[in-house]
Length: 114
Image (tube, rainbow, N blue to C red):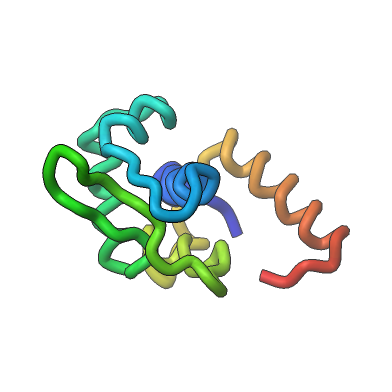
């Protein structure tokens, strides 16, 4: 299994929102700057994550994105939401593949299940 660029971005968004803390909002432009991606590209990922119920969004000057429901979400859930059931059939991105291989080795060594 491997991460596409889109899946990698989704996982980084969820991580950033987790690190920000419960009830804290991120503006889309703040997340885009933090993650080094365009706001337009990020918007597509945020839309999928919100549709899945993992993020909540609020409009307006004090709005933004925050965590909604993340309990029990596995990495494979994110991969499938972003890239579909055939996520493992997408062409491999070499940099992300190396990171994925290292992550799987770490998970296997720790005895964790995904």
